[in-house]
Length: 459
Image (cartoon, rainbow, N blue to C red; front, side):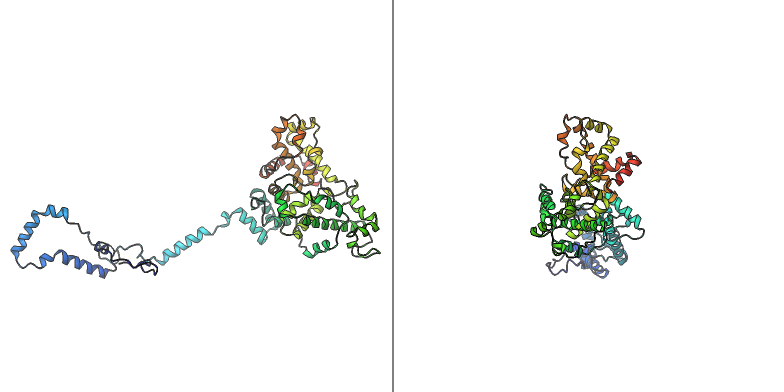
């Protein structure tokens, strides 16, 4: 008897007629109610309407009084009819018409719950918005906010450490300009650089035991990138010393881009092909084009980037702006960093520092690779990427404090070991959050003059 849309759905069978009791409870309209009430009254007074004798009526009333108890127990009670008022009548839920105001109110409530206000916005969504849409308003304030979000919330990544926004956050924090992909391809087309043989001697063992890196980054990709970096540094060195020989000029041996591609040409050219590489390891202060360890330092860039061109831009800016002292001459920046590891550890944990010094365990013996590679030599790789997020946000010089953090985490084991040398041959797996928390909290213990040394040691 109702107007429910479910009742008239084409995929449902027609409903059977409802019993009279249900009909009385759910009338279709006030007019229908009046009809049903009239029928009910007629049926209940049927005997009285068809009686012509008053005596018969009295006799029937006497019989009804004598048997009222039994009739009351057996006869079902007819529920009272609802009030026939169009303003207050009851109806089923399915038949009720929802006012437009209620619909708009419920819709507005749903919209209010689905749309987040800026105050309740997920910090990671805010970070992604800064990367995708760029800063709105004060640039320095937005950069400070980006650094804070990287420190407190971290970048959204899967279990393998892969993040869609990580390489772009790194490029933003490095203030990388837009460089055409052709610039990288031109360096690739130039063939083998003066450091090509040294690069090939290192690339095959780059993170060799890390399955995540081997699955994503090929050795050929690593060779191309390091070779392009070597050419880039080689060109910068020639420009710095004012060499009159231009890169694109030809000589009696042909184009310099191809002079090192053939062993015969390399032999004919003689010693000049190796002077640029040798100067990087001869102990001087001249800028080099490749040093051992650059392959591991380059690995996280290739792993995090979505193309070799992106990794090339980030890695080149990193080694030329942030830590040029690590790839220059005899790597004087690395040795300064090792001395700072000893100095900072003595400030942060004097007892542990004194114990290691008593065992003649200086940082030069156990922390060389960690300083040179920014902890990239220690697995797991996803933890390395989280530490690098922190270093890009607040400065690679804080890697020295991250190394001290790893030592403090091993404190109890080192102090109880009669030979800590064996323990420090390889650091335990990285715990990025714990290391970052330690480095940030202990930064206030570092005096201002020592902090200045940290900031400038890799220049």
